[in-house]
Amino acid sequence: MIPGSDYLVTGIFGLIVATTVGGALLAVLSTRIIRSVTGLALSSVGLAGLYYFLNSPFLALMEILIYVGAVCVTIIFGVMLSEPDEPAPQEKRSHEALWGGVALLVSAAIFWGVARLSLQGRWPAPAAPVGDGSVQAIGISLLTTYSLPFELISLVLFVAILGALTIAHGGRGKE
Amino acid sequence: MIAHLYDRPGVYLVLAAFLLAAGIYGLIRRRTLIGMLISGELIFSAAALNFMALNRFMTPDPTVGQIFVLFIMGLAAAEIAITLSIIIAVYRNYRSIHSKELSELNG
Image (cartoon, rainbow over all chains, first blue to last red; front, side):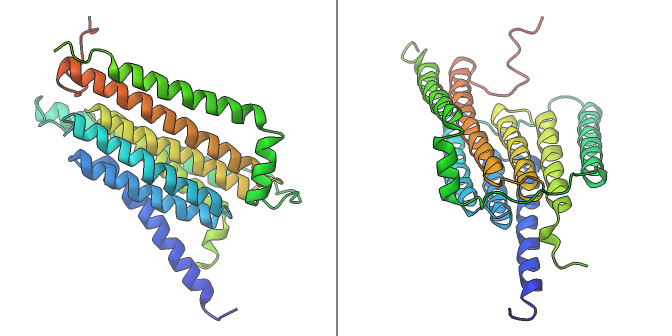
């Protein structure tokens, strides 16, 4: 092992964490909605890196494929078909600031509480590992132990696509 | 000790809590449906990251969490498809997707 490679890996990890956090902040705070979608894509790329660090390259690939490749592109289609930019605040400034304060307070409280719980909680000691979590193991358990949820998720996706087509098609041509 | 930071569950759990908080902030603060949808996606990501962290550090079988996160991604994709079609239908009817103006059911 090369000396100092540990710090290199830690630096890459820090970069990935910064990407995730920055993407999430960009997604939530920007007023132009297209920048918000970009933030979501950035955050998803960072999350894919985190999955890689958590010993799951398969999920990293899936994250990029589904979130960056499908979800963000679909949201951009939605942006093109409507006019979703944040409107200029119409109500009074004080009202606006009040809502901002409430939102900040609620989210800060949730962050503090959950982070404190997860840092102080007594997590059980990890048991001896029984599998290696490889793609092969995932495929085998998808077709044996989890075959029913696997079928159900395909049914859910099918119904969702049909429902999306029906809802988006209804009311067309009446204008 | 700054090295081996990536080998501790606390980092991932706190990061997931941050994503959840950011998503909830966006849900409260956003005034358009697509902005709220993006915040919802952040909350999905927080849940998935939590599952993966616990799967890596606490569970004996590392396939379970990966399969669960795969299902979460499938449900998120289905949710995106449905929500965007609803948004397009709403925009066609109201010419707006600002949540303040969609107040027909407001008594």
